[in-house]
Each structure stands twice: as structure tokens, then as C-alpha cells.
View 1 (cartoon, rainbow, N blue to C red):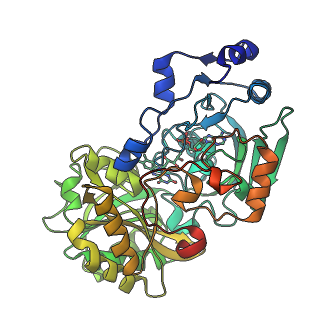
View 2 (view 1 turned 90 degrees about the vertical axis):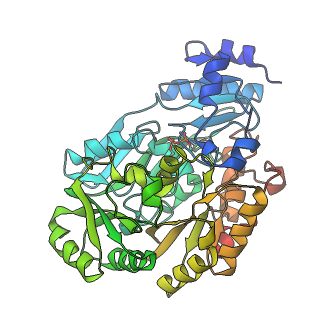
Length: 462
Ligand SMILES: Cc1cc2nc3c(=O)[nH]c(=O)nc-3n(C[C@H](O)[C@H](O)[C@H](O)COP(=O)(O)OP(=O)(O)OC[C@H]3O[C@@H](n4cnc5c(N)ncnc54)[C@H](O)[C@@H]3O)c2cc1C
């Protein structure tokens, strides 16, 4: 369909391959966490993988792609869970993992090339007493550009909010998809133009991000006999401004049994909160736990817990990932619990859907407000069963975004304004960036046969 041989000739010394095995590997991300995405994205691959290492190589690649009208789908670490780094319409898989390195690092601020791994940035920042404000639980593999283009938040978001909150992305440098590509510097709020657009609004080359002061973290699992006790404690902890924390992840019993590494630590029948507390706040935290009737089932220095991995790898989307190792047919939704009486809302939704399976919920900040995100882990049967769960959660007052689809509007976590559309037309006039994922004309977005009755940011999630 595309003139790949002519393109490859034009790429000259830029690393590229048409080896079908390498193409297949790089054309996948972590969409297999969703049973629906497994069906929707099966067999979709690129025609060639290109791996530029310098800006000149990247610009040369863009010129050649535009000349032959071949689409580009960017990829960083390939850990995305909506399948958004899978090329829907073939073409070039642009592997940005080799385009990496820290550009500048000073107290409070880092600037890094697109393919720099989040864990590397965190390690380097800690050497000067700072750390990432928040990161995805996949930080060992995820890149900074992949996170901004495809992610939301993670551990740390309980304090600092998400990528869409003001002040969390200082700047982004992007390359436009034109015959003579431009290099744009988007500062402050303008950087939102490339957030959660899955690479469809420019190829990110650098990201500048503010940092947080680094703390000596203690990981802890706190057990409660009742799920709602864990919820009340979690909301209290999230709101306790003086207790320095990084994580508040609630898992209802029997999840501590489904996560094999937690099973020996957690008393039978207990729901848990996984958390990270600064050593300076530990004493007060212990008192707080006791006041709420909890028991500290495990505590250890960061990364040294008896469960064999950082505690963050048992929270957010990673918890489902752990459970699926033993129960591959467990699935989840992305519910948003937001309201003036958050505890009552969570209790109402829980009552409505608890028959589906144990509830998971992270407490994070969005727009300054503490919000719960999660759903029950259910044993997947059919799209109809999933749609029924969405409706029940909505009826009880939660918003639900669609984590089982693969384009910007359908996932629903991006507020799309006229400015976003004008920017899209400006930077990608031929519609060659990750085509089908976010088109200026919504009718040109890829249609997926399996859709859920979910909410979008413009409607219920904001
Ligand atoms: C188990 C599990 C747990 C997760 N936990 C979290 C979490 O806690 N928080 C969270 O936010 N996400 C989470 N995710 C999703 C994902 O891991 C993160 O968002 C991660 O930051 C993505 O980075 P990446 O480099 O792997 O991106 P990729 O998967 O490579 O790409 C993500 C998107 O960004 C685009 N992209 C990549 N590089 C560029 C570039 N240079 N320019 C333009 N577009 C680009 C891709 O086309 C794609 O659309 C999780 C996923 C899984 C499977």
C-alpha cells in the first residue's frame, strides 16, 4: 500500500528494519490487559520500524514520510494500555527509545529527550535531592514522551495531581509532520496540546518537567477488617496535608489473596491500603492508622518489601497486571469517583457493584480535589456484561472512561477544544500522525465495533 522500499532508500543511514518479527514486536504495547482491545487490535502492524537517534535523522525521516504520504506512529517504551502505540493504518513505527538523554537538570526542574526512561530521570534527580512529582507504575520501561502523550498520572498524583493539572508539564518540544518540518516549543499551558493525544499532534522530542523534593520513603500495607474502613482511612490520609505520602491504593478483600505476593502478609478477610510515607511522617502515620482501627501488615524501605518489587507495581493498572498472571480473565474499568461526599459516593457505588468482584481504588488529586479512580475486578464474560457494569457504576454516581478502546475521543480523558483541533490541523495537515487516533474531523477517527456506554471529560469526568 505504501512505497516502503523508496522510503527505506531515502532514509540512508537511519536505523530501520522490515524484518516481520521485529515489526510485530514493536507494533504491540500492553493492550492485552483488555479483552476487548485484544480483539480490536489483533494483527495490526507497521510496515517498517525506524529508530532515529538524532534530531537531524528525525527531520530526515519526517521529510521522507511526508514525501511518500506514509503515516508515522510513535512509540516510546510501548507500555501503553489503550493500544495507542499500535499502528492502526500501517506505515512507519517510529521507535523513539534511542532518542534519549537528560538535556538539563537543576534543583526543581528537568528537561529530557523524548525516549528517556522515567526511572532514569527519577534516579538522576534524586542525586541532587529531587525526584519526579509522579510517574507511571511502569516507570522502569516508560519514556517521558510516552507518558505525556499517552498517560495520566500515577504514584505521587495523590499530592501533585495529574498531567492535565496546571504546572505539571513545563514545556514540550515537538516536530511537525510537514514537508519542511518545524520545531515548536510549547510552554506552560500550551504543552497540554500534546498531552493525551497519542502522538497525533506532533512528534515530541523533549519534555521539561518540574520536580518535587525527594524523601526517604517507607512502603506500607495497612489492613482493615472492613472495606469501607479502608476507604475512610484512605480519604483521610489523602486529605492529611501534613503527612507526606506518595500513594494511597485501596484493594478490597480478596484482592490481597489474588495478588500472590501479598497473600502471606495480609490477614484473612482484610482489605488493604498500599502506601508510601516519608520517614519524617512515619510516627504520625502510625498513630493515624491506629485511630482508624488498622494494622500495619508490612513496612519496609522503598523497593525492599517482602513482595519482591516496588509497592507501586501492585497499584494502579499494575495491580490488575499482577492478578492476570494467575487469573488472565480478570478485567477492570476506569471509574472516576468525584463528589462533595466522596466516602458516601464510594459506598453507594460499592453497594451497587460489589457482586462483580473486589473493588480497587487509587486516591489521586484532579483539579485540586481528591478523586477515587478504579472499579471492581470482575471475571470477564462479554462486552454486554462490561456495559452492564458501566451502567451500574454510572447510575450510582461514578463517571467511567473507556479503557477498552483505542482513540482519543473514545477513551474520553482528553478535553477536546477548538484550539486542539486548530493545532492538530496546523502540525499534521496531511493526517499522517498515528492516523485514526485523533483526527481534526471526528468522523475520520477509527471506528471500533465494540464500544461501551462510557463518559468523556467534557461530560461527566471533569
Ligand atoms: C501494568 C500497567 C500499569 C500502568 N500504570 C500507569 C500509571 O500508573 N499511570 C499512567 O499514566 N499510565 C500507566 N500505564 C500506561 C503507560 O504505561 C504509561 O502511560 C507510560 O507512561 C507510557 O509510556 P511509554 O513510553 O511506554 O509510551 P508508549 O506506550 O510507547 O506510547 C504511549 C503513547 O504515546 C505516543 N508517543 C510515544 N512517544 C512519543 C513521542 N516521542 N512523541 C509523540 N507521541 C509519542 C505513542 O504513539 C502512544 O500513543 C500503565 C500501563 C500498564 C500496562
